[in-house]
Image 1 (cartoon, rainbow, N blue to C red):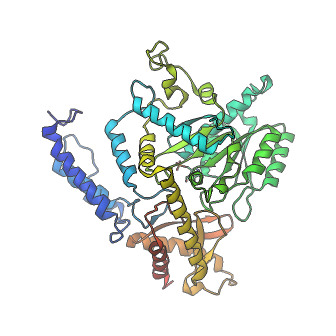
Image 2: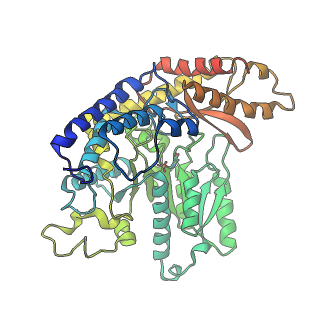
Image 3: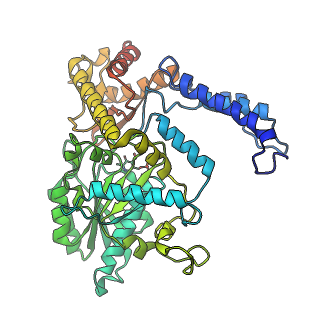
Length: 489
Ligand SMILES: Cc1ncc(COP(=O)(O)O)c(C=O)c1O
């Protein structure tokens, strides 16, 4: 057996894979500990010096591969480390990791029941359960349908396309309206994928003003819809956000859905970040009105810490996914199969081959129960409340705006800028603080936390957390480390 053959052979590969698993164990149990750095920042030339990136004619030995595997892990950012707070995903959940390993061993594709029987049933179960949670009907019936998506951005794109499909189907005379006369509305704080996909779908996009907390201004929405209608354009959809990327704001869904009803528009809710709150009895009120959405995007890989990627688009319209997407390729979805055709879920998707992102989510759900996800979410909300309290308690930290969710946006004011907010160059100098601190923390490997400007606000940090293994000591660590890094500024 040779290595050019894509087949496992115990004699040749068992020991190699066992050694690789040992490397992975070392990564998971040692490198992610608080005693080790969250990242080892190196210049590209250094990395090119120690990892031979070149692709060559001859194969490399297994020993070289094991060496390089260890280096890949060593010099990559440890997103499972407690001090990785840079993005809207983090952590390395043990059952999620197990689910990823199962997924990769299966190397499956969920389009037909004959190829993926277990995974098909798993997907149906998870989608039904989530439909039940998001679209609760008083009489207990479950409505709608859903898809797993290759990420939240793509899911927003599918929703825009569905909205356009639905709008054109509404009546005969809507059928031939050019896309460029169709208008989508979203807030200026919405995720950039909404604008990107409006471009891909060639529909117009109009941005709606936000208030001081980052929520869509409903009066501005109404004014702008009327203005588009006056121009002879067609307002076909609103994309609202439940948990904006930077400020963590929740758009007023009930008021927006009333407007959508009044003007005959599709309501999409991008709950990529906030959707996980549905698991918490204490905090799900933030999603009030979401059941009125025509479509909902939800990323379990964000708040619920399911490994990347795990993203779903749910819709209350029972048959729209099939109506809009189905092409019935005869080589895959034969009509004369020996089992019911509705077990072949692939035709309602935009992809053909498709990674079973459901497995790790389902596996975590089995391991934790719904109550485990609830405890996870409640713990994160507590940590975030503690972070906010600490900002108010410590000198040199200032909130950008109040928030009701995980995101805590704040400025660190270094000693040289304290009590100088009236100086004319204050904003300019404050704007330089976060990038400088970011450079210091990244080079030290002590913390990764994101910063950005927003509207007229100079650069500020955004605290977020998805790793429920953190506790209050970690919160204090973030403050101590920022003070430490910035004491001479
Ligand atoms: C509100 C919101 N929507 C959509 C997305 C895109 O999700 P993904 O990164 O899975 O493409 C993000 C990403 O951070 C987000 O914050």
